[in-house]
Image (cartoon, rainbow, N blue to C red; front, side):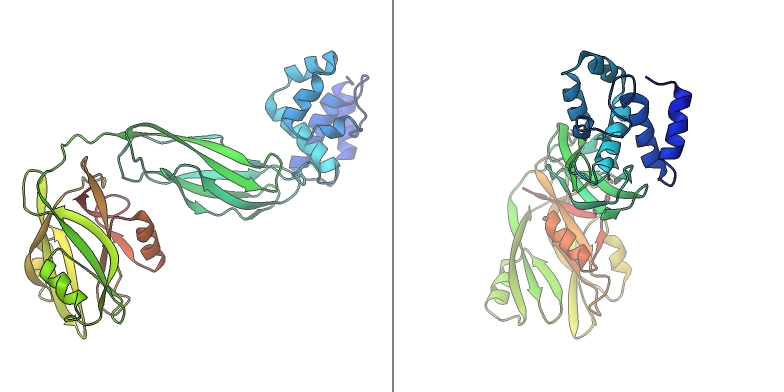
Length: 367
């Protein structure tokens, strides 16, 4: 190897005008790969093959002296050498000189079943020598959801971010991988995600159930749910004009019992010609509506289990998300759904989640 002073002098001339990331990569190559009977100052035919850490390590197996040197270098240094070789190759090696660097693992605190954690942000940096285009960011486990992504084209030394949350569907240790596909070196890259699902402490409610059906009024742009079979019959026979079944169903308890609450049903015509209904459990949104003169209390419509403050539901039940249309039809209306995909769809249309926890759980329905 050459004395470090001579190396630095040569490097000072060689890297003039290059970015800081490229300078570090060039320095790593020149300090460790050329001189002393090794490779040439710029990559030769053999060293040009070292476009990844794995390839450098594999190549070292053919030469004991090189292997001894490589064994002394950490992966970060080897990666800088590989980045320089990729850049010198004119963008070859599957990376074009660009490389995304990020954490390789993500851990979440224990989380109650079927409730979403706070979002965790992963900052990604282009530490290479060319811009990187990110084509996809995906998760192989729906319990770890990519809920935000600012990564598109990432310039040299620039950053972008992805947001991930954790919503366990079962107890115990849960795992998944967030995959980032790009035209950068080393793609696809993976981030290992881990979390723990917590068992609920309360036993599930019991008792007979009823079916809740959902309907939609296209002219109003409003949704309506009911457990009343007479109402269902009149809607579906055309007595109540304009309403049509969406095909979506969930269950509720027929009567009250331990661990359940009655759901108040209110009706308003204050926004004529449009009317609307509102449902909320007693003790969790029902009582304040009694004070609103625009809403008429009709009945305790059915019974449900209540979510805790984090939005977690008891064992044997599922969350029913409550979404408010924010008055965008000229009248208030809510949609109640057990489908996370529908929840996301409605939020994309301007609906606002209401209820408990980060996802807005209105109440919990039997499975």
